Image 1 (tube, each protein chain N blue to C red):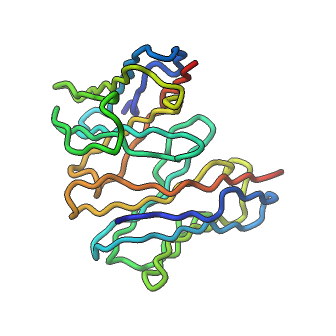
Image 2: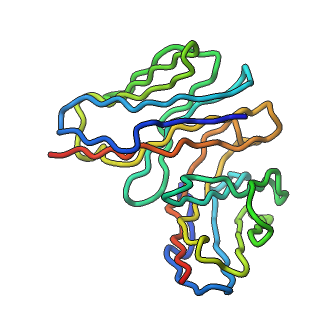
Image 3: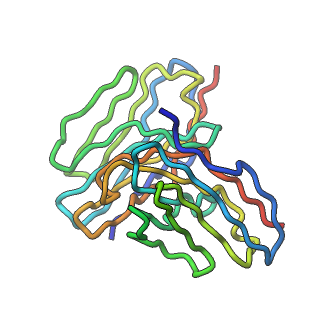
Length: 116
Length: 115
């Protein structure tokens, strides 16, 4: 069965520090997708990235970067030079599209607080 | 392009009542999913509709139901409300089907409080 674990419940950093949010997943499929979403105080989840299981290249988008390692079943998210606006709950999610319309399974989320 | 719209934003009900929540997806999106978010359980999948058909259902009691209309708008209904139904209910739409491969676009949710 698919499972996503975000061991860090809450993280607090001072502005301009780098922070890494951990995500470990479990799946029996060889084809799967991994996602990160951000949930600001307004409530809606905002899509950040999707990665398929065959693409282990790390990705960088501005201050955001993602490290995908199949060997450790991890898909970690790093924010460089954090800002107050990065304060939110971040969710890692997994889907197995070839396993019969399975929905996204989310981790419990990591609440990030960036202090000015 | 307008985003996913959920109404109402807040609801207060009492135990035993029923409630209907509404979701309008992004124009052109045919898949609508519903999630329940609580502090203890996190985000839990309720159901997904595609072209007016329920494609998938989560592990929730029959008191939770939904439907999708021909214009892709969706409603979910919870009957005989219990205190534990207090949660943020999030709707998400997607261009893709099946749900698993595409990215979801979420609404701001309906915050339901059951007293």
